[in-house]
Length: 447
Picture 1: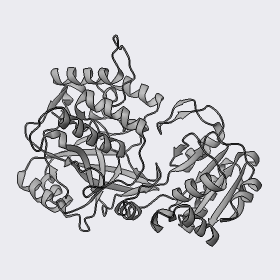
Picture 2: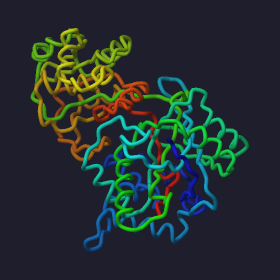
Picture 3: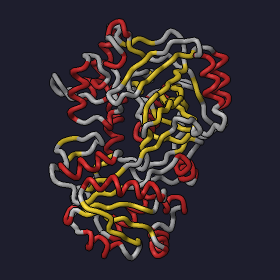
């Protein structure tokens, strides 16, 4: 069951730090080197110094995690970050424009009791990586806080839990921040115990699907295990919970963007060579030339609206190919992924990585691709190549050209639900729930 609790969050004293917009930041894994520097310069108390410390002024054998913890301790001592007087649930709205239409995604942040994946009703949907979990474990161990929230989605056809909390804030003024993308983030505190209890009661029997923050959720569970092994802790200790943003799957502001791939470390290949290799499983069609044709290719894919239709760019002859899975390809995918569900096998990202990259093109041990969401980002990447250094996807750029690009449809919220309930995980970066939640709106202490 979903065990939802109020908590006394740590929040910035805006009288001491200035506008909320100056001290919040995107999640650590979408901050590249340039944005990290910008956030450092924006405000001396920007949360980037906690979630992605760059190691300025390290002393002796001090690590970036120690430095982050030192900032946190100092800020708490000086009243820069202060705990709320009473336990609260934090209603959080994000208002944004996508494809010319304005949306508001509504949710609430609370402590949610940790259930190890596979043992309760909190489900993952994407694969995780050991290196990222090790990094977050070191940070969470040093700071003893959830510095950023997990993004969880849950079924609530009538949005009842959210509406209860909305009623509790209808006469309140929100705290507001605007991010560099123009997204307005608003937060209200709900301390009314009756409203919190009513919302928690509705949430109790519901499953929660982790939409974003898998590494941090698994890390929170590892922190819980480590803390309980180290010393005796009473029941319902804060370490048993994790900070989570809960959003109804039926919320009208739910938008999932595609995550296109720009591949590093592959040999140059022409469109003819690509077609020769994949035509056993796909019906292929050359559709245009030049990076800019990505817009037309994406329009074709979006109109068809099928996970099994993808667009490939081949740098060797500057050509785009549209590929549609055929019956032979469906059979090949079944044989390659016999232990997976039909829903998993039908995903565009699964077809791309399992069938095309892993089998038909026989690319093994590739570096992680660069993940981008807007077609303009695809075009830019194909034109200028791979930036050296850490990019906004958390990967290390090579400085070379991208020899292969792929446009792929996004997985839907229903895909997340179905695949999670099968106990399966999608390939990494299968979904991109837009917009990202801001770190620094509220922090959850684990002590």
